[in-house]
Image (cartoon, rainbow, N blue to C red; front, side, top):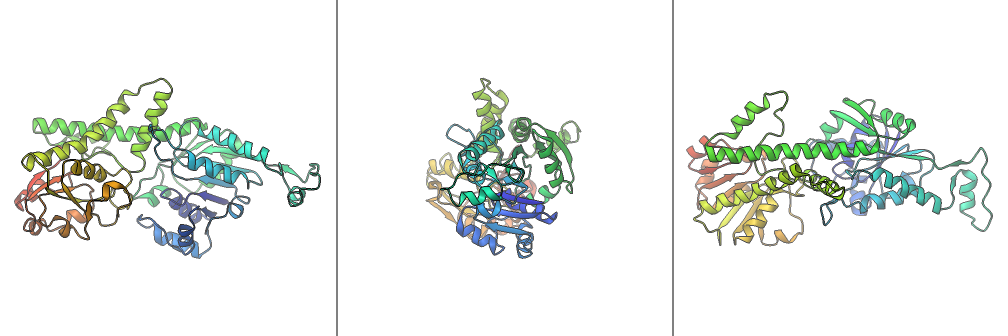
Length: 460
């Protein structure tokens, strides 16, 4: 099958590798010349375990073709997958400008029957809007029919358009919702091994084509309408985010009563109705999906005259986790952070990725700077971007450099490298041996035995 993926990012790249690995011919369509040039050399621009090697090999074999050209990538495609970003807008709504821009561009190049599958996370009803955009472009752009004689006529607009006959076919298409459920850090594995494949369609033809595209992949098939498919994605992420906020609320109660949230979570998770996943207390959910998707669902509900109380509480609990950690630092350092040096270990929103979008570390930096603290940061992979919050932050090449002469240390990302550090040796080079473990990564007994004053989340 011929597949074109629009958007070579954290979703588009793993999707391209998996579809190409299944034997489909994949065009990977980008819009940044320097980025596409690197992709054409088999080099990717993001960190994701196992992805770089697989992508390089498939590009060299000609199974993935990165390009800037819609004219090359769209006309021959059986399926066009939209995988561009949908960041948060001013009021929490999903910003669809990149989606609609890509749709307008691809609509100009549609030829034979094509399924346009929305893999970007989009509000309920977006597939309908995409269908309207494509229809409007087709109707307003000559030639209105696809076929050899119409293509010849398009080059010579002084002549009259030919009449349609059996050799000329109208441009036909379907728009489907086919959301992704991958996790950064395990994106390639998740794309190859989905729990379920959700297909939201309005025609049997689109359903059959998308089932064929995914037929070699495991997982339950959920075939439904586009609106339900779009809602499944938001509801899934919102539920997982709420589950994290719930265990953080329990962790805060544990701190008050002297219980251990890790033991509480373990006991809860053994109940098959609850499950153990996403019951890890810490700094809360972050990254490119949960924050924006929960805000977007909240906005969708509000726009439809419903106030979602659980989502509202989940957002507030999540925000409070960062404030609570800063409060622990404040108390541990004599009630004043002015002029204190705080070392933050971890900038990526989770380990095994370089993605810093909506990272908890960024919130911590902002809160600490507000209180006059000097901030140093070390991350094994992630690097800062150009946002203002990083202007007065020192980024260090090693954890040792970050903690040297620091007044306190914060673990913001649970990189396994941080667990393997020689904490007894690090104790000797800090100014004040206080550590706030925002991810419950380290063993409290071992840390205290190594000479550290240790605070975590919901553990005595």
